[in-house]
Length: 262
Picture 1: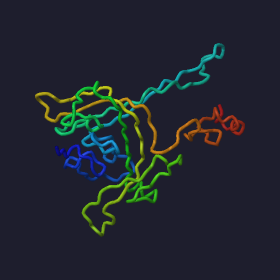
Picture 2 (picture 1 turned 90 degrees about the vertical axis):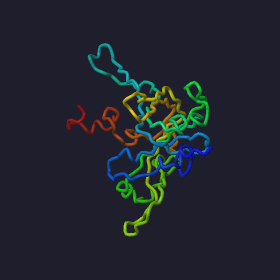
Picture 3 (picture 1 turned 180 degrees about the vertical axis):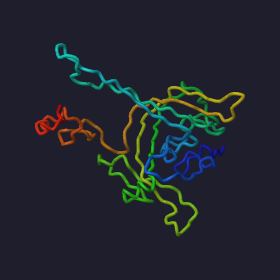
Picture 4 (picture 1 turned 135 degrees about the vertical axis):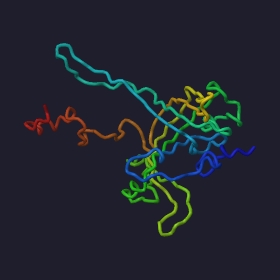
C-alpha cells in the first residue's frame, strides 16, 4: 500500500504535498518557521526524518535548589545546592492526518500501518532531533552563507553545530545561489517515551482534528560533544571565567576599595 504521508524521502517523513517547503524571514532573532524537528518514521529505523504539520513543540525541565543555613550565623544563606534534575519533558501538538498520525510520526506502527492505539502498546522508545536553523544573516557572520558551518565533532566546542541541506528551487541567476545549506544548532532528545496522548477538537463547532501529547526524555545533549565530569560549561573561575565573585577567591583582593566585593 502506497502511503505518501508516511513515505520517508529527502529527509522528510513523507513525499506528499503536505510536506512542501515554503519560505521564512531572515532575521537575527530565531523564528519558529526555521525550527525543524526530526524523529523516526514508521518502517525506517536507519535515520530521523522531519515531522510534518507540527503546530507546537515545547520542551521543559526543572530542578530544585536547596538553601544551606547555619545556626548562629543570622538570617543568611551559606550556599545554594542544586538537587537532582527531573526528567526533561516535551509537549507536542500536531494536525491529525488520515494517513499519518502522531504515533506513526515517531516510529510506531499505528493508524493504517499497525495496531498501536494506546500508550500501553509502546514497547520501544524513540529519539527526537531539534534543529535550530540559522538565517542567511547569521550564516554570513560564520562565513557560511548558503553552505552551512560544519561542527567540529569529537568534543570540539562547536560539536553541536552542523551544516544541513535545503532543496534547490527555480533558478533566478541574478539573485545568486538557488539552493544549498544553512547552519543548524542541534539538540538531541534521546530515548523518549510518550506519557500522555489526546485528540482535540472532536466537537460540533470545530473542524480540524489536532493530536497532542507529552513525552518524557531520558537525556538531552548536542550533536557530537563528549560529556563528562570536565565538560566545559562556562563560568569556571579556575580558568579565569569569573561567573561569580564568591568563587573567584584569588581576585577578591584586587577588588578591595572598588565596591565590587561588598
